[in-house]
Length: 471
Image (cartoon, rainbow, N blue to C red; front, side):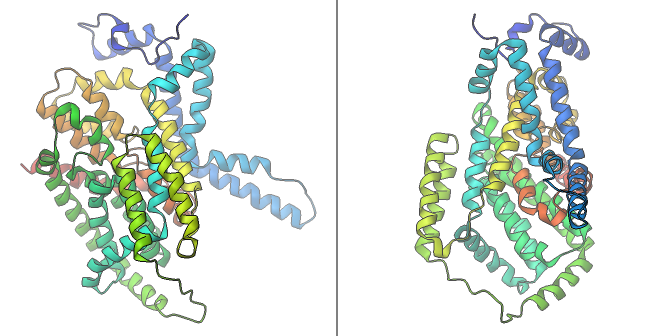
């Protein structure tokens, strides 16, 4: 017996003419009850992401209590429960965790063949694999030093003050996402912000404001071209959008939105920048313990750039960019004296996060597609912004491309809404987990979803207005 197709093809539902939205959703849930099960698991995972910081805090409390008992001679053994809870408190692990019982239930209810067919044929893991590779390459010392020198040239106009670094990173860095892909730009921007801003220990409100601004700017900064931002790549060929179209209809508005958002936040946090300038001045002295690193030879940096470019060019061919990663790791070993230690944990955790998100997102089309198809252009943009906040924006635009009869206004609205809302949550845009993974240590190990949402709300509104009001 051949495996059941999950999620069902649209013709499996039969005639749906004349049904209201709720009637259509009830009909599809009745035809395939697993639709509803998959969506319940999906929203349970979303709820888990909001609870993750509390779980992480509780696990640390258990470890602290265990160590106190050991010191007092009142306990022994290993705090296994605390370690397990710590894993459940990792935001990057949430969707992967919930994918396990989902797939077990799918295999139990539909058969092992159906589960295998779903994973091997219906789910595309290209993007998670690509993000792992691009994060690994972008986080190396030669790439980071090269990006720092390039942005430093701009920061020179502001005497390399924390404000000058902040402005150059949050303006030019996200725009680079249109050429080196958004995950690459996110990794580089987050690493530079960590080194130039977050290491100065700014106050919590400023940290969240910067993170929210980073996520929003990267989400819209990839719209200058048609080949770098995941939500754009999903529909560019289907809708016939080339580089000139993207720059004229989205890129110029994104540039305006980024500049205005940065300006408003710069004014709002001007006192923080003065405090950071004082800290940076105090840190600038080279004491006897300062570490002097050997400079990275130009040819080593050039090889890294070539690996980065090759990964971008082969972003849709996992066999090529994963194979190239093995050669890249060998090259970093051969040039170890001018390399930093490659930490694969953050990229792998982000890949695990996106892999789980792709599994869940693939099963949400049964309700997302009819919701999107029944909205007018204005409501569609607002709806896409809202839906993006708890589902990857690439999934939103992809499902919109499957809706028959989508007009030009509707296409523009769904894209504008999808990229506008890409900074509101960690799961709204594929590169966001990479940024959180790099910067989480500055937020007590976990970024508050509410704090991030509030910080990103104003730049999201401002960018949205640019997409609506600018002709």
